[in-house]
Length: 183
Image 1 (tube, helix red, strand yellow):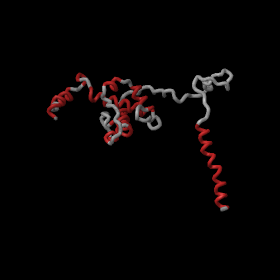
Image 2 (cartoon, helix red, strand yellow):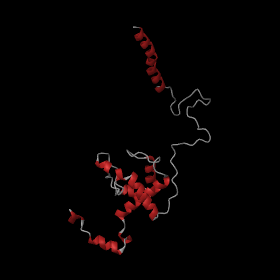
Image 3 (spheres, one colour):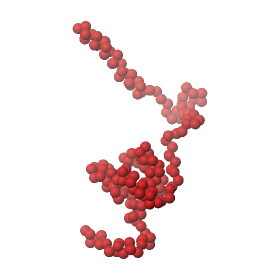
Image 4 (cartoon, helix red, strand yellow):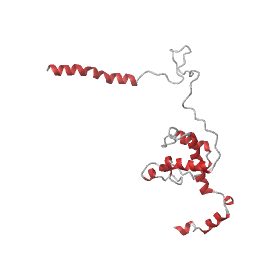
């Protein structure tokens, strides 16, 4: 009996933890722009101290590098590692993760994304979009730019103006069976 009493006395302080937890969660706070008698000016919103760096401001995008074969190779390499699971090899939004039931991203070949500027693509890689999580902590800024350059190459590969093709490429295209003949 004595052991039971000691055990109950020992467990008594634990019962106060739940109340303490709720007090921690439900602390009083000021709404943005609300009144705060604590401060001399009576306003809850405070100006950040000098020298602080806000973390929610957009990261500065480095100056665009010259598009070289090396940059595109690096972009293809990083794209293969980080992007193909969802976006697929060709950028159609049909990667392995999507084939297994994850929501599919849009195709890079949609007009909306072909018209988007490089900054948009860079920002999406950096901060994420929709169900895509941010990659800023995984992909260095220079590699993000290389990925953007590679995405542009993927887009160009399907939408190249005919007048920019070499004659031998044009003849190979003409020799391909038409879309209706393949079905």
